[in-house]
Picture 1 (cartoon, rainbow, N blue to C red):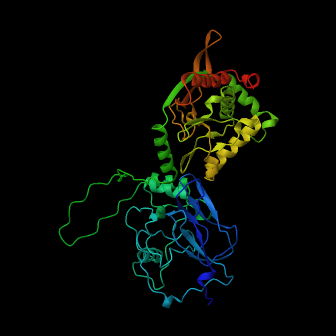
Picture 2 (tube, rainbow, N blue to C red):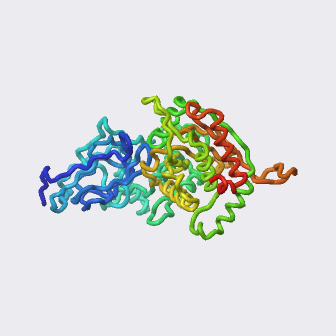
Picture 3 (cartoon, rainbow, N blue to C red):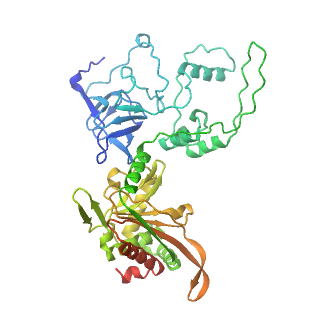
Length: 468
């Protein structure tokens, strides 16, 4: 057996993967003790207050320890993995007879996937710098669970003679685990249909739709008690979800914005029939081949033109310096709903992009957000934002500013409505726009001009050319 000295062990610490972030939750380990790793290899995925990020290891070696299990929130600067960089072989495990029996705490997560090991002995419960994700309900001991599995396979109640196997943790991605947790579904009872036995969101919803079969009451020695009333399907009246990650950061930012910047919201209803026709024409244009063309593309371009015509709206309030900072660039934020909550990545220098380039950037932004791969850098330094509440069938809203930004445009659902067009009532495609702005920076006149310009462009999209 190869002996490793402490000098040959490198400790990899939780980095600050964002701007000023202080902690991150370990979502998934991609390695386990004994695995060989190389410089640049991704060893784990963590979730910060802004996004999920994959962490690469900065050196070659053999994994010695994983200091924290999945689901643990760790402070930045805390060591999370130890790697032996001496170049020797991985240490051999002690024979089974020499290994002391260890009782695993109920709150400790099981291994992820085939062969994944639980938290190593010697690290125990997390210190004050970490917090474990709370579990709901009692957990069946490993010995009892494995015996029950063998009993079912053997078809009788006698304990099997072979040593029981440790029950594996069901395979599911973090968003699916969160969905199951929110719906009160035990993943061990869900039948997986995904590749390699992975549980999907559809599997969880299917499990919810199945009626639960009540278990018979255990016999008692005394006179039997009256049979309990039938238990309804939904026996949980409340669900408590920890406030953390993206939702925690979003809540703090929105509260700070709402009580710092004096908000004003203005509304306008506009006929966008010509814009919708232009969308269909652009879909057939070869310049937009393989690009996603939708109304949001032209709305984004209309807002950029309105900002160019009214540049003072693109500003921020510097309280410390007592200055208004007018920005000569537009980092256009697009609010995106993801499994981890609402995030607002932005398109850098959107003002300088052609319409096809803007379409490509929008497509990449949405795709990355849906995959949960948006980086913290992509959500920093935004100047103005668009939130499309119309995709949910909502007519309008009063959006709250993102901190540090001066304006946010809400786009309502586009619906066929009766509208006076050329002196006659006709069915037209109509939507309602809402612009919220910081009244310290933007007065009523400036805000009204910006909103009116956006509406005018969407009513007559040829103004994208004449006002350019």
